[in-house]
Structure formats: structure tokens, C-alpha cells
Image (cartoon, rainbow, N blue to C red; front, top):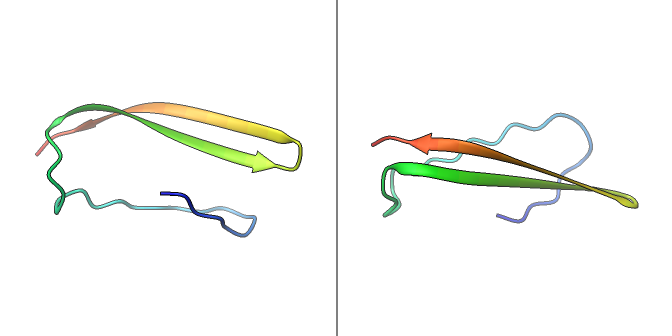
Length: 49
């Protein structure tokens, strides 16, 4: 996903139930571009079907 949003707090829920994705551990990366700064945060998530 590559989305641009207005400033403020955002929540995004992703439903992976309809996708052919196996149970396991995944890395989710979020990048914020704020003017001259680029902030990246990666988190480990576990998908259990």
C-alpha cells in the first residue's frame, strides 16, 4: 500500500483473510515523509490462521 493522508492520527486495519498468505512472522514497515525528514518504523507481526 502506498497512501497519502492528511496530518493527524490514522488507524488502518488490513484484512488478510481473503489473501493466499501463510501463517508466519512478517515484518511490516511504515515510512513517514515530513518535509525534509524521512522516518521509518518496522515491526514484527505474527499471522495465525
